[in-house]
Length: 107
Length: 107
DNA sequence: CCTGTATTTCTCGAATTTGTTAAAATTAAT
DNA sequence: ATTAATTTTAACAAATTCGAGAAATACAGG
Image 1: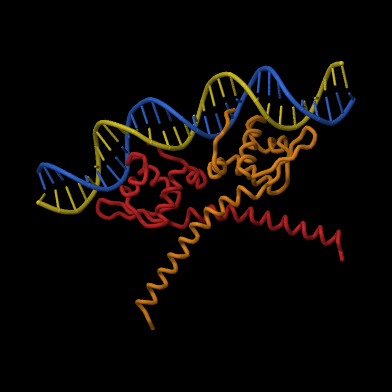
Image 2 (image 1 turned 120 degrees about the horizontal axis):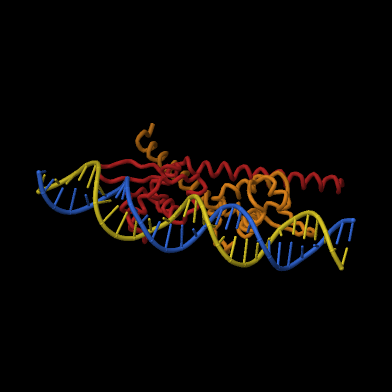
């Protein structure tokens, strides 16, 4: 399959990849073990795993001819940073509302 | 354009839509004002806006023949919930490590 | 060295997404 | 009533993504 040029957000856009992350949150698994949980060929799973690794959502360590996948923080942190930006938006919006209320009702 | 069946994650997978959310975090805007910030036709922007609204990232209020877009919490909260799930994974992983260290080094 | 297992690479096709232009709907203003 | 401005709908083209299957690579064990 072609070289995927996906950013962090596009990576978790795919439901299969999110399911893989969920599975890996319970335990590290080899690629073949992952395949058992999907209605998908091995090459397809392999490709998703590579995308997840490239985006920093998992790390892979080779054990003989098997490859163990484990969750990795990096990818998640990028998403969290993005959400944090908008959290500040909500916070400042709330603050503006407070000020407005205080000016209108200076009891 | 066809009816898009996109989930929350796929919605923010598109860079243009993320840019729209960023712009709207500074101020509410009409669709036409949004168009000025993009190298894209009006219908294209209009479609993205509809997708963002459907997914709960923005709300729209009609003012005459213009439509004002404003950020809305719902979409963001769904993403935060997903990230929170994995935060617990990291927390419990850290806890396991602590227990392990305490058992090995019971000073 | 040969066999079986785990995984990846390659080639390809189908489905989905994103964009464009032209035309329609809606509303404000002259 | 016409005209101009804002937005959407419709039909269609281009790009991207997701998947399958066959063949190649890598490695463990007899």
